[in-house]
Each structure stands twice: as C-alpha cells, then as structure tokens.
Image 1 (tube, helix red, strand yellow):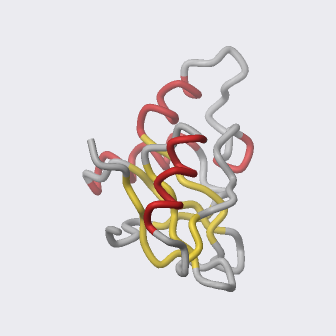
Image 2 (cartoon, helix red, strand yellow):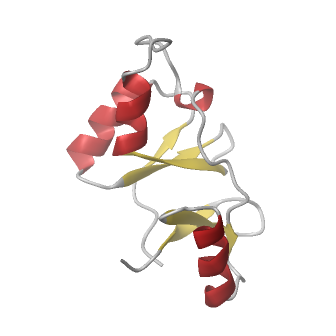
Image 3 (cartoon, helix red, strand yellow):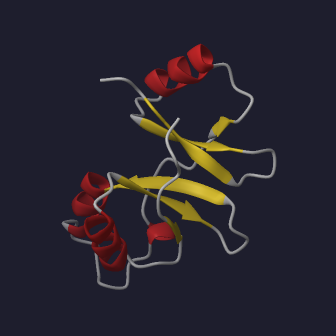
Length: 111
C-alpha cells in the first residue's frame, strides 16, 4: 500500500484536477466528498479521455464523470483477496479506506 497522495473534492472541475495531477507529478488523485470520505480515484488517462468527449465543457466536475466509485479496499482486507477483486474489476489501483470511508492509502497491483 502506498500513501494516499493528493486528495481533492469531487466538485473540482476536470481541468483543475488535470492541472493538480500534472503539478503534483502523481499517477492519480483520490476524490473526496464534503465530509472528506473517499468517493473515487481518477487517473490522468481517465481525465484526458473525458476532456476529449463531445459532451465535455470546462465546467464538467469530477463527480459528473463515470469513474469507479467502489466498493473500495477495506483496511482489514486480506491482500490476496484485495488483489483478486482488483483484477476482477480490472483496476490498477484501489483506495484503501477505514471503517468510516476515509482514505488511508492506495493499493496498486504489481506490474
């Protein structure tokens, strides 16, 4: 498990999120709701794909784009089971959350 990295509000616009991703030089951002609970994970390639869509505007918010919204990896999960669930859902990374839904880190699959 890696540190969670930058966490941004899910009402942030896609353009601003892309700038944060590039500026922080990280592969993903964790999204959080108004209470700070994890609501998703977004990558640069996901943001780039949505910026190129015909429906996209500069006001498009992260909460408005289709992303994996969980379930996320619980902190008490067995590593092998968590990896199997990620492979089944074709995820390269999954937020690890505590019992209240706050992000503790990110689990990534080995390459």
